[in-house]
Length: 275
Image (tube, rainbow, N blue to C red; front, top):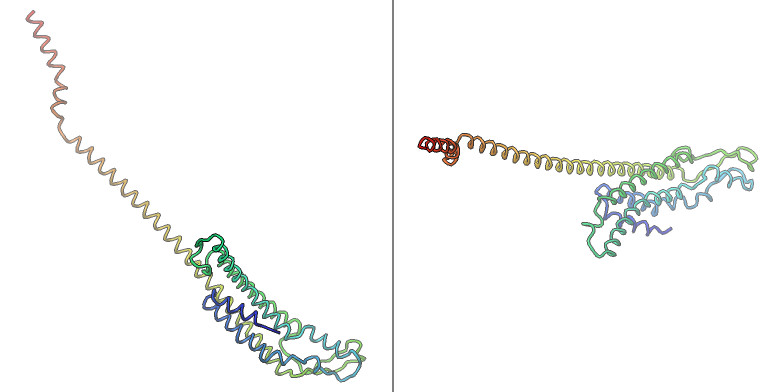
């Protein structure tokens, strides 16, 4: 099986990941993909041929093998690798959509198409949640299918067409069990990395959003304070001008206007006496 597409996918996602995301890519590529290709695939390569029962009844070995191993460990491991890596395609497709949108509109719409903000941040968080869900699902599936994470040396089978209870022997059980433990350990490590990255991003952007809102609130309160200070200064200046105006004596023109009716009456009375 060729794993070149998965390698290219992981290297493409690595450009848009955080530091924790790059560690996850390294763990998947080195401790899971390379281990699978280099060692694990050869261990389970002839598992059906090496499964032996102490009876030569036709069909008995096949039925017993299918009962104890409904899905091969190695094929389920390969499916798990594909499924946990697929959500990263969402991030790659979203970045490609941004680049294509800028190309069609022939203008700069984003600071950087790969910058995690807005819709791309939501896509990144969704991909982390999906990867974590797939990891947990496959661990539970492994446990349910094989009744734990151990590979027994001997299994007893009494399924027809076996005439009675027969003993069946599994090849290389210790080696297979070591690789299963390694599979579980790397899956748990990837789950921890995904949850750490998810918590880090939520915490980081929550603090960023809160600080941005707090700065806007402070700027608004400062502008309100500045406006109230201007209004109070204008009121004080108006009150001071009114007080000065009241304290000043009346002008000559006002005095002459106020005594003019008395002078007019005096002249009139003098003319009447002369007559």
